[in-house]
Length: 148
Image 1 (tube, one colour):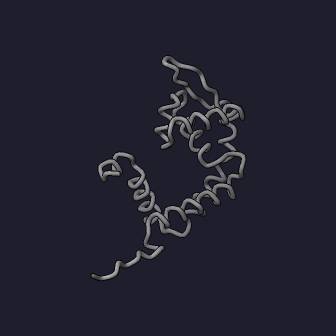
Image 2 (cartoon, rainbow, N blue to C red):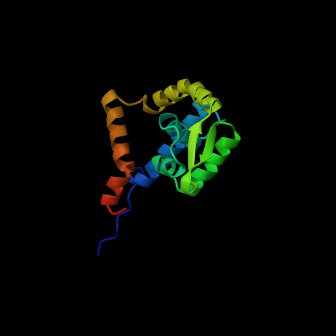
Image 3 (tube, rainbow, N blue to C red):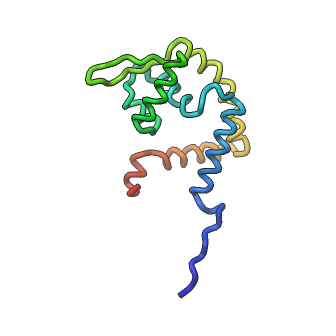
């Protein structure tokens, strides 16, 4: 029986995804600072586009569990960046505060710089293809169809 062949580290998607995440987080902090975390930024960006959504929907939008989303939302509320209001059935409606909106405004230039840093080594077609493949990879419906 032939010996199993080990898969090279640079051919393992899990390793490459982990490295890409490390690079992305480091770039986020380099260009946007440490006042807001990448996950906090994601929550706030969704609230910017969908003000007043409930906490459960927000959790789905950013692919987090509801308890983690609730914890992060509470921290954002304490910082004065979002407001939460209780809805029927105990749900909470979330929205950016003026301070949260202002904060996101200060991050636009840094986010543009981060995008350039992360995608700058790729040609335009490669950038579009990378983003298309990443969206396909993380899309919940496509992963369910694959049995994950």
